[in-house]
Amino acid sequence: MSLTLFDTAARALVPFEPLVPGRVGIYTCGPTVYNRVHIGNLRTFVWEDVLCRSLRLLGLSVVQVMNLTDIDDKTIRGAVAAGVPLREFTERHAATFFEDLAALNVTPADVYPRATEHVPEMVELVRRLAERGHTYESDGSIWFRIASFPAYGRLSRIDPGAMRRGQRVADDEYEKEDVRDFALWKGAKEGEPESALWDTSLGRGRPGWHLECSAMSMKYLGETLDLHTGAVDNMFPHHENEIAQSEGATGKPFVRTWLHGEHLVVDGEKMAKSKGNFFTLPDVVARGFTARQVRYLLLSVPYRQKLNFTFDGLRAAASALERLDSLDARLAERAAGAPPAGDGAFAGRAAEASAGFRAALEDDLNSAAALGALFSFVKEANAALEAGHLAPGDAAAGRALLREADAVLGVLPKDEEATLAAEVEARIEARQQARKRRDFRTADAIRDELAARGILLEDTPQGVRWRRKG
Ligand code: AMP
Ligand code: ZN
Image (cartoon, rainbow, N blue to C red; front, side):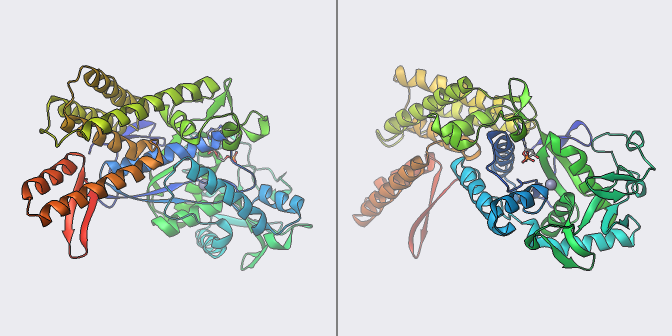
């Protein structure tokens, strides 16, 4: 593996190696669960899924943690407006978020920690920061003193000196010493609902937004993370503040590689709730598109480029998927023709396409180039099928390539999986029958046929098990 990723802090492509060989810890900033996410938000979650799936394809094991922000001004306002306790309100929106992720075939993260369930960890982090002189109290709230952390601004390359300083300012209804400082802990205010307040050693109140990501990432992934991801708008102030909080408390580097994805835009403008230019996944489905078409469109543009959303783009995604589906069906038909005669020249093309696909992903997750490698193969495979040049073994190798690519793309129809499983089970049964009648040639041929399709058989005392190669 020679994976390079664009590290935002270095503003350069850097070779990626996890701290613990073979195992990657990733923290991704999750949604604020106060409404249904739009497809702009979902673009970010889809490329982060492509990242995790690519790392797995490249042979690494991945632990992904994604927070749910279930306590902040927006969730509190929403709960009050809906007249329900905070938790009831945020659970509704967490549920639709998970529905959207499932519809888009996003592999679930290993942990989805909720801020409200990690208040003790956040309080402890503030205590550590206080011990090292990074905090002060004002007006019942606790602030991070940016002047105490000289590295502030390193990630976003914002010059903290250029921000107004030194004067006492009232911002967001809280008193602080310096306009640059941010709230770690917000003291309770008149009219805030009971369900959004905690009694802690810091006083009665609630955490500031940034604190949760430092506390929860370090709890689940350790004090130094391999990868931390988000969209470009997260870089400042959110990620800058996370660095200040984490490194201020631990004295250790917080993140080894920062990845930031560009926005999904409409007519050149960021898709945003506040601009009213947004579509949710159900909005797009109501117009006759499918979630997998949306997924394909979202992942087809490399994550560091802006993605201009149009319905024409979705139609193009639909036709690209039709080409994949149709080749897959034709190859399946061909592969079932007879036991393979062995890998022909065309299986070699599948191997080349596989190498091209992987190399593109290793190049900072260049999904467009990866799809390019795949579709060159699709074109050649269609031509070979038409010319009758494709042996069943070649067709099987072609199908294995589609499956391999789909481990990252996640766009082939789900029922394909079921079909494949049924096909494999049927072949295993045929092999068992052959063995019973001591026809070992046929039994071996079936095993080899499955191996050519990337399926390995294992004889266990409980019967025959199968798994995918690699
Ligand atoms: P918000 O609920 O607006 O704070 O969005 C949650 C996160 O989704 C943001 O912090 C970004 O990481 C991401 N996001 C929001 N809008 C877009 C967009 N138009 N394109 C890509 N990602 C976005
Ligand atoms: Zn975050």
